[in-house]
Amino acid sequence: MSHELRTPMNAILGFAQLLRMDRMGGLSRSQRTQVDHILRGGEHLLALINEVLDLARIEAGKLELSLEAVAPARLLDDCLHLVRPLALGRRVRLHDPEALADLPAMQVDYTRAKQVMLNLLSNAIKYNREGGSVLVTGTASEGHVRLSVRDTGDGIPQAKHGRVFQPFQRLGKEHGPTEGTGVGLSITKGLVEQMGGRIGFDSEPGSGTVFWVDFIIAAGHQGDVPGAAIDSGAMPLDTTSRKATVLYVEDNPANQRLMEFILAELPELRLVCLHSAELALAYVKDELPDLVLMDLNLPGMDGFAALQAIRRDPRASSIPVVAVTANAMEDTERRGLRAGFAGFLTKPVRVDEVLSTVRSALSIV
Image (cartoon, rainbow, N blue to C red; front, side):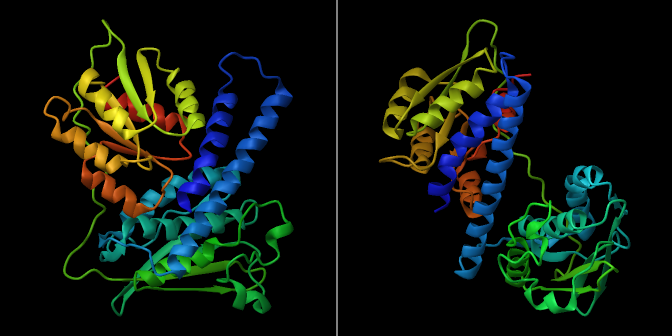
């Protein structure tokens, strides 16, 4: 489902991003506005796809977690950095977190715990009043760390409290100006409970709302978030005498064309597109490209098998191979990085992310 739903979104959002960049300067103001509508609508649809897929995995009991010790202060610092632009745009003040530095580490999946806190923080900002504030606090007791997010919004009427964590419930906000799917809190509750925690809230109309989550304290030590840097192993590339070759292995013609347009931003590169892993392996053996962008879901041999075949070739084993996939599940990314991919691009791709990944892999300034 993830692959089938996200693959067409890759072309929709990818080409819309390229239109918005308007390299030739040919778009009128009204056309740029129309492209902005396409992007906003596409982003909203993608968010719904992601949330429905997450909800389905949770309800089916197929959510894979990697539990580790995580420091609450580090987790909240990362989350607050991401939501500050949203708060600024809505004129909501984010107070510095209180009493987090001395809290013990929590036993959580870092990515999923981050998803939980980002959802609570973004809701506290979106459904706040203009000029309002959001405060994060933390306490530890009885084997749990409690993180609380308090807003100064309208509050939730008592009659609607029982529907807060039900999917597709927006509690009367569906007719307001703030976009949403009504799935986020259902997913948040499922994620917290999958990690052995609890979630709840307290709210009164006119007095704001505080959502809290309890995460289990990690046994024995303070934790921190492990580094996420990936060493591609790429050597600096001399592009003064020749164009670097990037091989893109992708069976979807629209996605091939999209990559051609994206990499046109890097004139020092030459892009070669092939539609199967078997053809790609023959090309790699003969031509030794400088970088391979490998779709994982290919007809015949898949991207994982193709990577292993490249690694077995002594002449090609050092070529960086970046995975490109519409399968957005975290276990796929973890498996890919363990297998030896130098990076991971998820469809729908972001133009700036593709460019930065290619530049990094080839050491292009």
